[in-house]
Length: 400
Image (cartoon, one colour):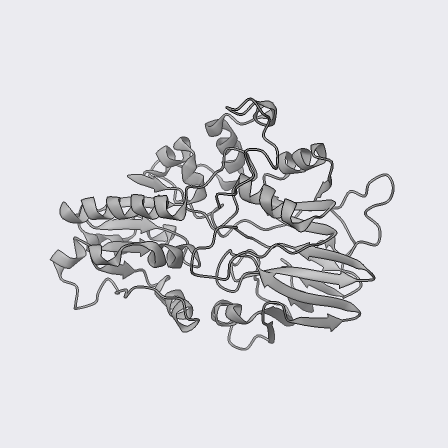
């Protein structure tokens, strides 16, 4: 099974006897003998959600939320051995009481609560705080130790409201439709695409879904999520005039593919991602517009989520780990890092490269820091009100 690694015990031995430790296979619960979102094949895997960096093929037994079942079977195979739970439903395994709680990330996404010998740990998986109508909203869960993501763990990341976001997208689509240009919006196929469909004004024109998106739309509809009607690009009901007014939801991989030729010589295009908050990222991606849309928590959301748990210890996984660990330690919490292999299929990898952009993925973090001019000074700089960025001040009302 491997030996525990990637955890730095404090001088008083805080790393010993933990409910979750990092192993080469993934995050492991020693008393329960199971893993949470492991990246190598294991016997028992608790899966927080269906994105492929968290839900991987090859485990002997899977456990996830009911609403993740159809997604996991579609992506991993109909024959996987899968047990599902409702939110708040608890089971016990080797003396560890386990329950799942809403994470607000995508359909079926869950935080994992573990209770054993008087201790309570919560592993967040990926999450966001602002409800979007396509999945159960994030639920704060009290715990002693919280394992959190930090995909957008820098103070510069602050998302617009849902209302402001969709007003901007609708205005862009409407202008394009009036000009006879299709509007191609690149978004991750699971979660982001359905969130966009749920929020746009479908009266503006027809909506076309890429073949990678449409099957997941069906999963959401079957779960009771209201989505507007969508068409395949080759649907006979769509003539050339209809396509010229259409909103096209497609994954980043469709960019500059032959499939795109259906929408004319000069369709308008845009990308929906949290990374679009950075002007340099928008410039390099070679699209007309960038909309700031993320299914991850922004900086205020991370602060609010951590504060809401009441945890004294926090482990930080993928994303801006060093910044968030340092910040939390400065606030009096015991914060450490878990080395994981998450974050390579969602916002962090779903940004299409521009025509001349050969930037390798490992350089992404450096480019983000360069574009945003973010370094040590970010955390030390005063806010416009003359206060430092701190939980409970400017971050009191989360925007995600």
